[in-house]
Image 1 (spheres, one colour):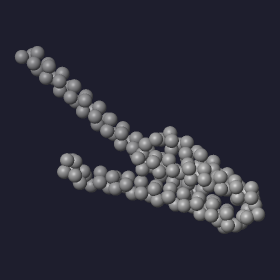
Image 2: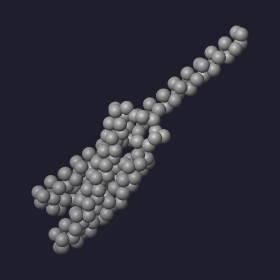
Image 3: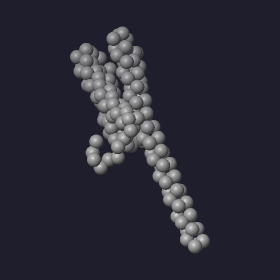
Image 4: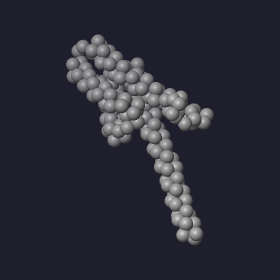
Length: 169
């Protein structure tokens, strides 16, 4: 701990460690989702040579999914840009759903469907993780504002009591 920082209690250190581990988990899961999209592109290019239209749609959807996952890295690690996160999350859910139904209708192979279901639930888990980070940040800001608000009230009460004491003398 840097010397200019106040000493933290064990509970505060555990909360801080929890936030760091959640951010690392988010980055790891988001990275796995991006790698999954790249592997899906490679698998589709190798497997569906005679289904040109299906292959094209899946590649476009995967690239759009990758593009939407990149801003979520920033939102998750910096815990900023909640609106950007919401837009990317909605887009990712739509794209993941489109990929799932495209595989379900055009290529009803069990391995592909199981992989898409796993990817869909991984995306839900990732979005819930990121949203919990934003909620934690808002909770900490509210606690800080309440603490600062109470200290301002105490300071004003002290000033008023000092003024009353000075007037009574």
